[in-house]
Image 1 (tube, rainbow, N blue to C red):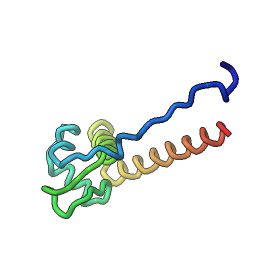
Image 2 (cartoon, one colour):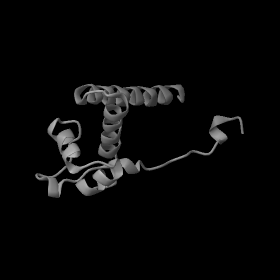
Image 3 (cartoon, rainbow, N blue to C red):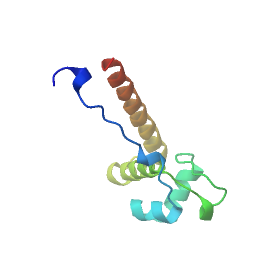
Length: 106
């Protein structure tokens, strides 16, 4: 099966974008208090749907982002702004790698 046309094609759905989480779900997954997540929302680091914390709806992408920021803060002592910048740069790197793989597959 060295011929690329003969190899099976893998397809999938990105669940991170389809999952709906509440503030309580995100707090549990991040093992933190609601105040920490609310601060991330206030800073614009994560942007849930909904007009109040009780009605916020988060996705898996928000959860991943919150976990990385909180981990950078607790493990490395990075301030919130620095952690937000690091997450943004990591996401850009992931997007560029995805584009590069797509170009290599052509």
